[in-house]
Image (cartoon, rainbow, N blue to C red; front, side):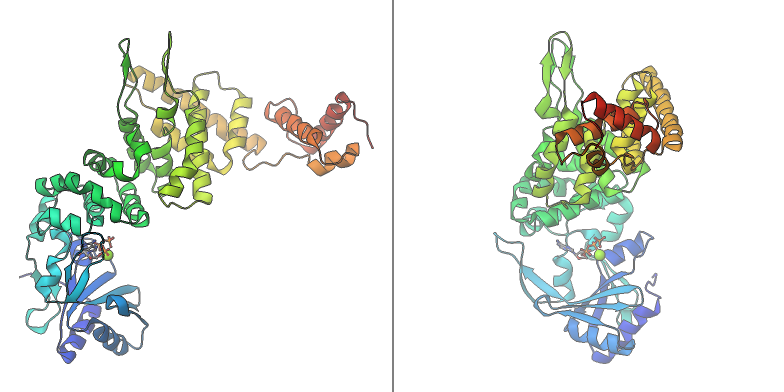
Length: 467
Ligand code: ATP
Ligand code: MG
């Protein structure tokens, strides 16, 4: 039989367990990832007996490394070089209907494995002398790993109902590993979706973010949608689904379009918030949808309305409300701009404006837009792509020339007030805007001398005289 766990850190735990006469096993995620061929440095150790005491003894042996003890949970966390080792006493859990917090009692290894969420997470490897390094796999987790299957060890209705967060975890593992959820575990997702209501939004969003960070996030979102899990916490995204027809004209299904854009972005970037921008770029479409005779379906200002919806969505999903929100809002608000440029002759001033408005986010915006270019007609795609390349080159050219990224106009409000003897007022803002527009339009150069002369001229036109 194959023997795992050759690293000295495991030997150290094993020796100490032997001295203390307790049984210890490595369990859960570490075992799963080891069998998948990418072991982590995150170890969970189950101890039949006192977990905290074993942790303290191991730490002492290792040379006094720090142990953090969580008495309430009966767990202890130890850092050893770059390893993170969590010790927990084997437990048996029983659940009440209104809470995912179980009643916990001491238990056997078998009890402990029974309470795990999926067969692939319920395997352990022995750290005990007689059986060191052997895999204990009561539910066929190794086969499920090989075959790419997510399956609950016990009745899925009970597993999910006990702790509904496991449903999000099922989707997360399926999406991350590109595994399929076995039929009975899948069907139970739909039956128990509403139970998600007892889970805090933070925990749900943690799993959601892991789904979004998976290599092909559409896999996870399709399961969330088809099982009704998505409906429990993200109705705005659900509302993207469907295509209405009128006079034989339909619009595209914006839910599936969004998933394509998300996968495209995921292929190019690991940035979670850029991926969120992909998810949310068309979120304003259902609200702005309108049939216009002679034109067809329109989604006028969905970029603007979408950006306005984001604070509410972020707040409810308990996503960070600071810079990340602002970043996503900016991308959603601007997501049509580069595409719009490809449909006209690409003028310098339009490119300058885009650079000015996007600032540091210009590269991410261009990436989002290239991911958003979809059409069923190959010639159209080809033309889009060619024009888009043109915009990209122009952006580089103009940025080199004008340095507009993070640009501050050369004339400040203070200077305007000083020059014309003005107090802070609307006129100051108007003059500032006029100068900025003149620079963006290329009427004057982006330098102090030209801008100063233009300020005087603008002031004079408004009937102001020098102080
Ligand atoms: P990752 O660390 O990649 O997020 P993981 O599977 O290791 O994945 P952890 O949260 O670290 O997840 O949990 C460690 C182990 O604890 C899991 O492998 C599983 O056996 C068990 N576990 C975690 N959460 C649950 C849960 N909600 N229900 C049942 N068992 C769970
Ligand atoms: Mg883990």
